[in-house]
Amino acid sequence: MTKKERAAFIVQELGRLYPDPPIPLDHSDPYTLLIAVLLSAQCTDARVNLVTPHLFAKANNPFDMVKLTVAEIENIIRPCGLAPAKSKNIHRLSSILIEKYDGHVPQTLEELEMLPGVGHKTASVVMIQAFDVPAFPVDTHIHRMMARWGLSTGKSVEQTERDAKSIFPEETWIKLHLQMIYYAREYSPARGMNPDKDYITTFVNAKGTKKKSISR
Image (tube, rainbow, N blue to C red; front, side, top):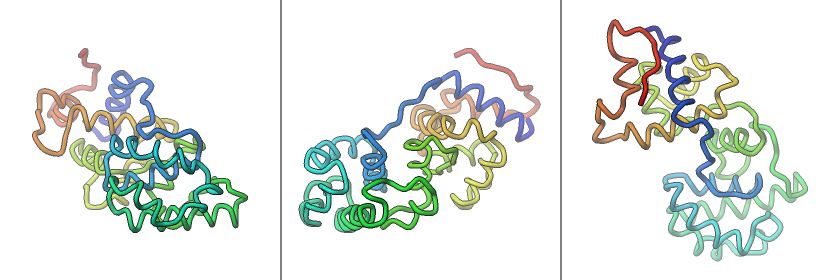
């Protein structure tokens, strides 16, 4: 299969498996999403979702967040890991949102990336999930699947993002990045890959196979 054929088949199958993938991080608006995504660095979504209710009960907007001390924030978010750095970033970015944006989350990738603790992936997630702007944030799951599906070299997440954007139609990006994450978690974990269960990987890498839908 060519890369374009692989990509078309993947979009087709993921659309069938996950027609309406939910956003994995609980949030109520762009600000709470931004904080949740920041907390998810080197932490599972499930754990973030256990921690954020306690944090957002005290401060679910930048105006209330800056009223908390960095130490108070750190104590709440400690289960997420990297709490000292994350708590400082949350407090500082909340101050910046008030000073520069009247308490609102900016709606451009460039402005988001300038906030403390907000890298390219975090900014891309916020653009997609808060503002419905096409982007293709690459986490470890997407990085792994792009390599396993022969769509990227897997040498860097930056290259993987470029490859994903070049092979998949832009109108699929918003939903597709979530579908890929859910598929990777359910069918193609980093360890203990099962070729029978991970049927998309097996199919797209099979030599001499024509693209078709597989009933499962």
